[in-house]
Length: 93
Image (cartoon, rainbow, N blue to C red; front, side, top):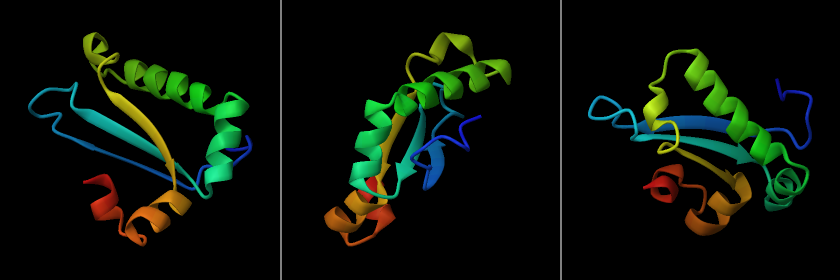
């Protein structure tokens, strides 16, 4: 739904302890550069991604009562490179 929007999403992933409680879901969207993230915030793409993510979770049977508690977050690969020399494990730890 957002594949043609700019800036492009560099990557995404999720993790959590949803077996304990579905509210412990974390979803990350990554942009390539800090400037891409700022552009996505300014042009509404970040808000659209949050809205679409929640809608897709709901449409696919994720418990509605926890949708406002899950974490949807954004960063850039550039920030990961600066902060942890590209070590994704330490960045997201």
